[in-house]
Length: 211
Image (tube, rainbow, N blue to C red; front, side, top):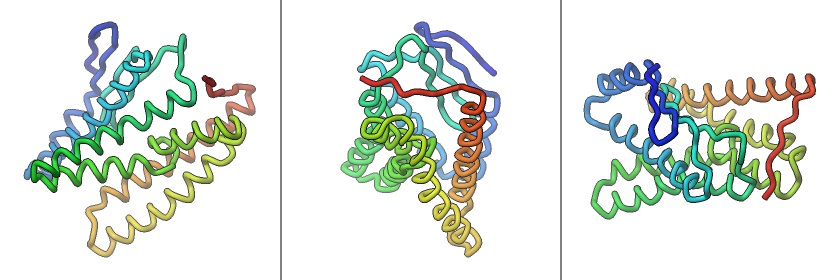
């Protein structure tokens, strides 16, 4: 793990990230992997810009094989509306990039941003759409309603997606990437739900911060 401090923010790069990048460049030497990586970086840049504009500077940024994670200090956390805006900023950045690339006659690169934005807007657990759905549920029904219905929304979205992606892979119409991501999100949803059940049993409660 490489680590340094930039402007008061702890920046970390996992050793697995360069290895993953090397594999992607080997498997897809036509440059599509680089386009996907740049789209992901721009996506996280949208989140970061929204955090800075709303007054929630991150304290740490970690780049790993599983993506980019921005961490906030516990002193001042965003409320429902600000959290929704921060979550939406990532897909919005990809949407704007797709529009610009389409106008520049770069349809393949534009589609990468469109796919990334649409996928992250799915109302499922760890995705931006899941966080946005959670904020809306907290606003209209409170934390208890959000914890009750978000796993249901996530399962309704992710399970058919996993089945469909495996069908595409087995029929030779897909490369397996979507199947792997779908299974990862399903497992993440399961372990996240299990951890919250254990925390609740141990008396640990997570609350949204209202505006």
